[in-house]
Length: 403
Image (cartoon, rainbow, N blue to C red):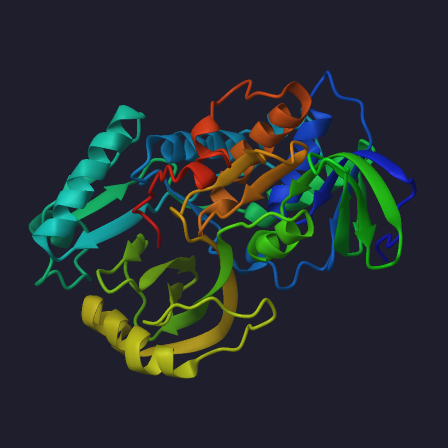
């Protein structure tokens, strides 16, 4: 059974949200040689059943429109492939790899083709291996696609594909605990600030415990706005529902299926063993209740299946094996991460708004946040353009490659 009550009344860092971002930050804090403080990670449900972490595709890519996002994913790839080394050579840590079947973006308009070309320039500048393919080249490499309406494709086979995110998540938590980080199943319900309003002094938990803090990290995923409101802060992050289906094909494809992003927005990828995983959202994409995970079965029948069968005719005969709904933590401001300290509440830090690409960004985000907490500045990859101060300044850094 998980701990439910804090062991101390005072912590140097309190992390609210213990899924992959909170776990990453906690572990990377233990990697900081100049930090020996007490860390508390609070999560309302340590089964993590309904977290974005557990509902994600567990894939990574470098095909972004923002160069910093490319570099963030490149660090993730290196971290995953060298997990044991990053964890000090611990023989218990598994050797992991990335199944690099790649992401295949398909453009059916000249405007979208131009976007793919512009993105490739950004990606190449960061060292990514993105290739553009004509319809004829796509058909030759992947004969199962129907490309009659396709003008251009974009794919990268280097460090783009499936990785075992849950293994990394588990080891971050396990290692952090062994190094003294405290994880409890509880819920932050209120915060007390100084009289000047410039710092959070304490966090009140649902159990009634009040714990004082040096710094607070909001790693609350789709619930980020609720956590920020406790400190009197408005945050442009809301839960958006995303649907997933795992299905088997009567006639499996004869080669691995890239994570294919159809122009309709439906995406589908290799899942192994003759099974595949598809994802989509409704045409109207509103914010939903934090606890709304109800499936909309009409989306599969009326939209997703017809799109799959049109794009890949072998998928006319398929059978759904399992399905679920999860939430994106959608940054409605510019679809990019929100990091760094608040501009007025100086010890309140953000790790929010990843808009569907948080899992693959968690290594760099946890490392960067730990550096900020300890040193007040990024020490490795400079991610300051994603800091919170751009929000009140109205300075958007728009990421167009959001699935």
